[in-house]
Image (cartoon, rainbow, N blue to C red):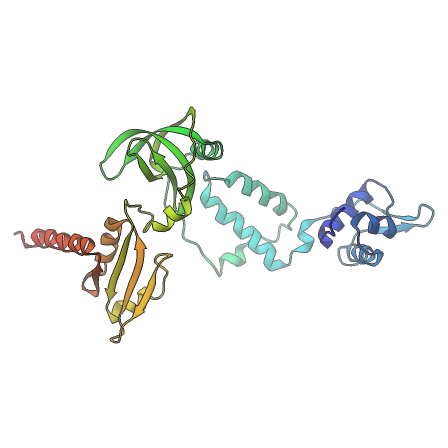
Length: 323
């Protein structure tokens, strides 16, 4: 039994039958779509009166037909604002050439854009809005397809990876679980046989990658979403920590404006400051982040993070005291 279809889908089907010269009528189309004959009549009237379709009725054949060639264009359903937005989307998408599904999305947009009038350029959209241009380079298109295949089919991947923490290139065998995009970079969440732990790898730092040919059994206890939630500024850690940071009244105004982490909670203080709490695992990333606020921020918990900040301050002090 066919489900009732939206008017646009029905119009596409009506157009196909008219092009095939099947001479459909309201009764036959109503039976096909399982809607009332009046609904079909409204569809045909809309095509003829609003879209300019040259539809006529042949009483001898008891059906509708096109009196002349005509194109059923998707652009007819778009107002100027929507058409401008589509054109603008195409230009923004160009910044992500080489990333996953760029080709598929680009081709899908092009199929619609080819029917838009040439006068619609998207320029008026960009006279009002602008977007940060991606400064990240080094996309390796072939790696995304390979990693996509590995995740879907549970295939191990052998890579050469430039680790920023050590500055060394290492060979690793990974069990890929998720490709994650954040803050201008793509990350691969995978089990690393070398470290015997889950890690987040920046895809652009992968220098070589091949499918090993071996399958792995995904650990159902591991949740990529939970792993991503525990990261801070895309930095993972070994163990989850409850973080509490007090911000001065001056800095609190800017802290309130953003969501810093999905688990965050804000406690307002009487002096106008606030205490930001969150559950994250990457203490080193939190340390670097909180120190940018100088004396406007104080780590309250955990003690390990507080000590890390104190040690860093002491090292900085030693540098600036040197003559």
